[in-house]
Image 1 (cartoon, helix red, strand yellow):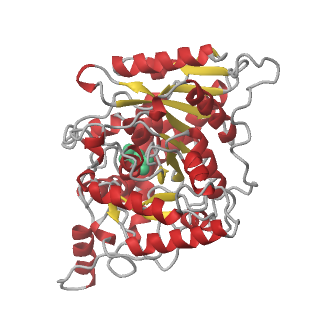
Image 2 (image 1 turned 45 degrees about the vertical axis):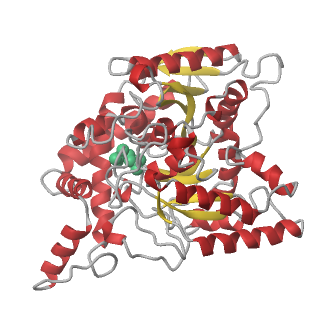
Length: 499
Ligand code: GLN
């Protein structure tokens, strides 16, 4: 049962092969058995089963929607009633929210059953899930490997089949990269598509929530429920939500039924295939592109000349915004308060010193520095200018193609501990995802193969980038690949998933 996609589980619920309560129980059992992965921060059987019972009642009354009774896990960056909402930080270890984030609220309203809250890098800062106060998450494909970050708990949970779907957030790659490292499908929508209300903020101009699941079709279903305007988020797009499933299974253009993607132009940015890309990843991406050609698409080379600059630009803008967003955690308004202090200033200092981990502190330092009077023009303003150029370069590229494809990351998942002593090495691994976030474009990761040699068991993700608001078409393109291949069906061996 646990190998099934949401769509398949829907059929099982509708045909009464299984009840929502039984389904929730079986996933809770798997979560319990797979504790070694450390994918979850909190689980609450009672809350989950209560939601499942309510879903069963709706199903019995014939009032089930597409998602009613299907389980989902939420990244711990979304505030939730009932479960603690920690953002992977000691600072919020005991924080319980009086309200649900819009994303959680909407998925609940659609009848989904919350399985628990997933582990993540502290305040979503990281690319390996080793920055969590609650400990690193392990990659279910290889327990020595990182699952990617910052939505590593969500990714590991879906990959190990501890949940059929999960939410994630992506500020600079945190849905796409862990999806790639764990062999699942994830999409970061256009900035502003999905409400940020109740998402604990990291970098507000970049943060965007999205679904993570086994298939593109499942992601489309989830996005249908998650997306759309929210008046409580001032950067939410004032656009009607769409039916993201509407192109699934259709031909790209109407004329030739023999090749589903005939007429699709795929842009390959030459900067994404240069030095620095591991051979095994390149081979898997090349094979995926060949598959796309077989489906009728044509490949065109495009250029994104400022790709390399996305790293310094992102690592100025994101910390700048983080330093401002995280100022609220002062031991008074939110968060941990030091037990002993001399005066008010000392209380702030000690609370923050104790509450935040090293990577978060590093970002606050960098962010405060680049925003300070003497350096604002030299760093922050320059970074903002290059951000515009990066966005413009994508628009140039989209004159020649409908979607852009390339790797999500330059390598497969690395070993736990391999990059923890060298933050810059960690930042460099974000090279292919950051610019998409800086431009606010939608991007996704689709499983397309595995590494080689010692890494033969570590998944590779193909990145698909679309133009603004093109999610429905991107999901169509991903889905067409998944109808022709079975990479998304591969699951880690049972021993890794706690069976
Ligand atoms: N790895 C990037 C960072 O550490 C992106 C994180 C994210 O998307 N939340 O900032």
